[in-house]
Image (cartoon, rainbow, N blue to C red; front, side, top):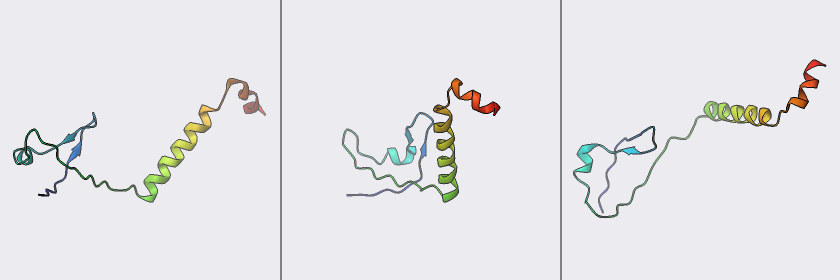
Length: 72
């Protein structure tokens, strides 16, 4: 089994843009095994995601009937 390591970009439509130089080395009409290694978010990035989700969920539960409490 051969292994190739290279950086790859995930396109906006969710596809992996494999470099042409590597494509010429890959066997055609065969199944290959792929292992993806992705950087984990930093604590700050993760906190920002949680903050956004919290606000999103809070406002998703807000109803016009709750507006009465805004004037108190």
